[in-house]
Length: 324
Image (cartoon, rainbow, N blue to C red):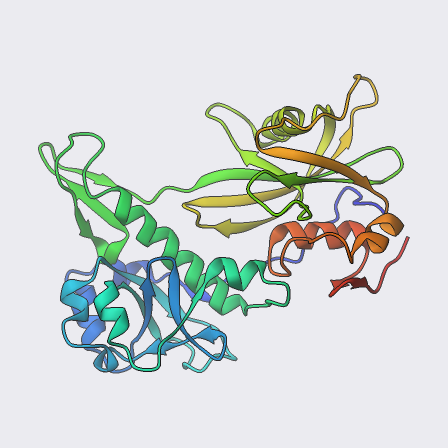
């Protein structure tokens, strides 16, 4: 089995109504904070308040006094549509980035990061948890880096329930940015998959090749350029597979497969800076290596693409459901 044209990852349906009409209503944050039906996703740095390994959303009145006034950022995320969540469908959800002092004042606090949710060996966060936390972190990261307008250098202010920052002299609006990045399953003529080990990881951690899309570049062009820069391999036939938000700080991962170009000479060569080791794996070779290498976490798009190629789920040092 290979990743044939038309094969795709299952769609990640949104479980969050972004509720734009409420965003633009003057005083929306104060109104929602005073609404007893609202819930608050509390952030501290890159971690969120949790309980039992899932996100813990609090009523505003359970927050320490002054939490909203001292917050680094407050954003209205929208209304929860998750039918299996603790909160009723339609619940308004705010994200609140609190100080270390406020975080320490929350009794019985347990904190979880998006990285630990997505990349842990056994982590399988709900779609609701992943979408809420990814959205909240992306917006909080954006607020942290846009306190001053890049146009004028003057301070900007948060507007539209945290979805716009407004600059002055002259008046102008700043909107959250998203940086597209491609992540690629490179396949050769034997249908082997190419995996690389990044310089920032443990030596035995392997994943797909990835990189940011450059200005003026198509997604397909980014696939060809990034793969060649990191591996020395020329590829062709880029096929889109699916996407995943990745707010570190503001990325959107766009998944592709691509084939080694048979008409161009390629020499497998790690770039030596980002990628230190590259290995081709057949399905049998990957199965046999599972006790020696670490693959991406179960909730990452990299893992999903690898399992799409493999033909089944890869679990805890073994693989099931494989088809050829």
